[in-house]
Length: 469
Image (cartoon, rainbow, N blue to C red; front, side, top):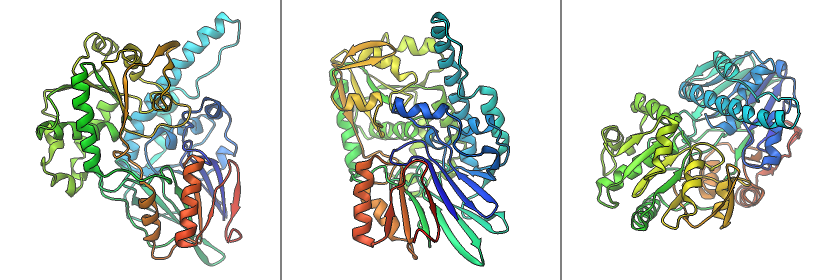
């Protein structure tokens, strides 16, 4: 058995890991690198492996840093199955088409500049046609129902509790009469999140490939996070300008709608219009509505009751679809909450709102998700007073806030508890999906608490099992 790491190695994004056993080769996730412009260049390079030799692709969940290059796989000739949960596939239908539209739009702009400079035009990383075509390869799978990729490879999915449809992947390989179990954690969810059950606990693993995004941090509790949110909303209302929340379209947007609705119902924040300025987030919200049966019991039993059903009837929540509607919002926006894509303020409609309001001391920006190195979100949180948005330098006067308690990722204690819950703990753990300080902190705690050999792979590094023991 051989494992090769082609992404999310010593960095947070770009998940892409190749597992080979006998004649079977499995690619677990195929994600985009996001944030660091010098690293993002790798997204356009040819894959560092033979695309046509891959037997199957298995996706853990529908975030771009895990699925964003699947259409590029198709573009380079991949035609074998892409395995995912049904909800991951449904979310990918929205996410990948949106990604292709952005790629085509940005390439058209770049080619106008190249034409002016007398340079040859370039092609987008993939087209809308390729994004739609790759969806024909998807095959749905249910959680907790084993299936066979070959007679020697059995696969089972477990709930990761990260976003709707997210899964951990367990692969049991038979080699020379012996079974070896490899587990890919995907992104492990933060316990107690609304809508989702807590992450599954697994029985055993010989080899574990594990995320470490918040491997050095402790999240505040949800009630503390709700208190922070209420305080920030009230202060933004008093300040008089808009409260802008850059938000990922999948999961985080729906959670923020939920929390804001509950806080208003409880009388903890003033009544304010909420503008959902993301057509993609609106489509994702419809998937939530269509799958209400998957909302976990603890959410239904919260003090506000099944608030998600009530959200659809809240006349203060407005979905904006057209560019004209989005632009008009910048002409008013007082005493309003604007939830807009994207979550790290690297692209999407949120950039236009920031460009119009960052220089106003009446405005507030609230980050409720991870901000990778090299992103505008990280620059604002670091206190930079001059930032570049859409080619224009903007002086920052707005209040910049952050709440980490709404994270979709487990923190260090939760990661350690999840690992400790294995009935048969892994002999080797590979840590990925983290900045180096997070990875090193988690590695030290794993080795101190459990004595498990823990490796931090480089991009392109190869490991063999059982030699790695």
